[in-house]
Image (cartoon, rainbow, N blue to C red; front, side, top):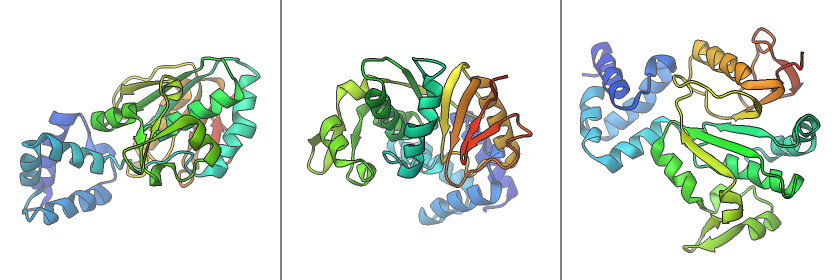
Amino acid sequence: MMDDNDWAAFKRKLKAKTDIDLDLYKEPQMKRRIGNLVRRANMDSYAEYFDRVSRDKDEFASFIEYLTINVSEFFRTPEKFGKLETDVIPDLLKRSPKLNIWSAGCSIGAEAYSLAIIMKEMTPGVKHRILATDLDTEIIAKAKRGVYTDNEIKSLAPQRLAKYFDKVEGDKYAIKPEIKNCIEFKHHNLLKDPFENNFDLILCRNVVIYFTEEAKDQLYANFFKALKPGGILFVGATEAILNFRKLGYTSFQPFFYQRPLA
């Protein structure tokens, strides 16, 4: 039976196996998402569903991917990436010739590779650090492979597609080693694991949609500490931080928040 006790048992099992703490996520939305899976599997309880998917490695990996909402594409919201190229990165490069960048919740790696392309074109021959992290180990493995579908590269300019990708396996494209080798991929739980610091730029876009407001505030506070003075946090187009001043940020531009220089 899908009741409060069943949901509590499901959360305990999930946290024990994966370290994902659903108490930090909005409960109605997560119950609805997971409940859809339970009903589709013709089961009566969250805990029963968890026990079943846990027995199959591939099925469990698909479940975690669904749970962590791994949807991404290259240069997602191109107009915002345009601002990154024309305004944000030039401002950061004035203070540091080599940038330390973090793609947090990197999903399939498209965002991190998009950054690598931008940095290669803006600063030829300069080796920046681009860290890309995600909670889902299976999706990190996909990101490391660097093979993408037509839909995932739909926002790429044709000249960039031709320059940085090789066509493979019919309608799929593999990113070239010169870009792939720019990224350092790691497993990381944004709601639990310690953060590195001294980042010039952090991107966390389309990640926090199901986080509670308390979890979001804590996350943005941790990002603030992880940024250098003058560093910038770039969030998703539906994720404006309304209380950014309370958290210490100034607004660089819409959806770009800066840790003040002093």
